[in-house]
Length: 120
Image (tube, rainbow, N blue to C red; front, side, top):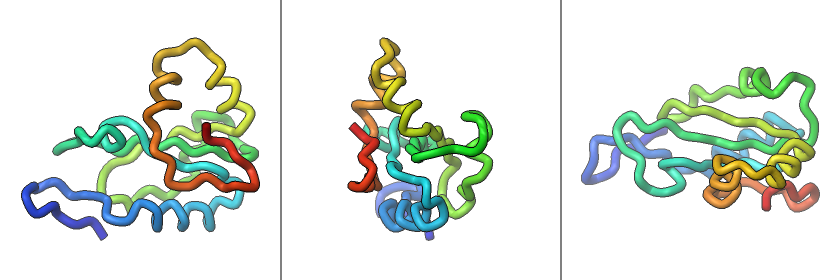
């Protein structure tokens, strides 16, 4: 359940790790889940969305359609989830792309399964 900060009208996400654990139960292919952007930097405010990145072992749908399989309505703010397979993630980390470099360095990982390390 979202709560209000004592000195702000902005709703905050009170238990991110619990939400991530629920996602791991719903998506057994999930090996890493984190957030980046304004929430990771701590400069979010009214109107900010939650930017998520999920690393999965395998995907049965194309990149742009994978997020449709995730239920995001229990989050207190609008959210966008980028979902990559482990192979895609490792290929992207090697690319010379400013967004991907920022994503790799800024992401705060809520879940990183040790049996299939994907997040680094």
